[in-house]
Length: 296
Image (cartoon, rainbow, N blue to C red):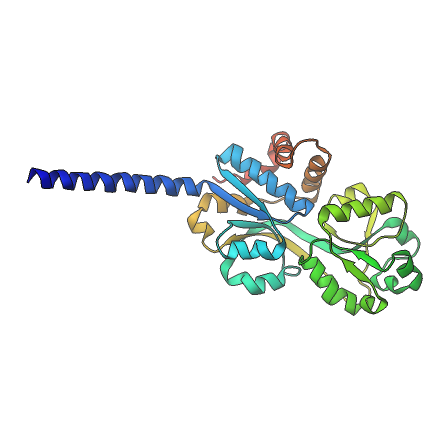
């Protein structure tokens, strides 16, 4: 009898310890934030700002993963990532929401009325290049070497430019090539051309620090409107609100103005610190911007 009682006591102890370990593990998992983002300047900025706040104020372990747009959506839909930090909706990323929309949720909107399109230096506008149809001018084509500088292959802006804007405005028939690169590579090409007042067309959007560094113009859509205004959403896995309510609430509370994200982008770009530390430095100097994001 005593032997049986000892065995039962041992089993009870094991179950109790296991249950405590499971509960502790669940609590620890709830304090982990897995965030994916695209290497676009504004998203890099607010993602690293979010990471710094989560780490310093809410004691999270934050894992950041840079990815192209398609894989970012896929990872969140599969539950491998908690959130994708830059979904342009309803326009640029509509194809991804058509594909993954049943398995992801919009947590909140971090930026309202974002605009995108083909961007040129103002000195080109001074020469009379102000609309998309102006790119059909043979002289303009020659001065551009038939080249439009893009960003990441697979980005929504790349898809709409290649599949909609170029055919609608006859740019593909002219022989224009849309060259994929990345956000930083596009900025490097823009800077080099701008310093020498050379003709260049890049895929651009606001918010972006390029408009703070250079005098730029978004070409007018004078024949067919391809790009409208989008809101930038934070997209979460379907069960995020139930699984990590504090993290979901924090992400839902995030919102930045053009001025705020512009200052943060410039600070990170001009800092000698690593991106996360530069964002943390800005965070500490601008508590009023993000204090309201903290969950009650």
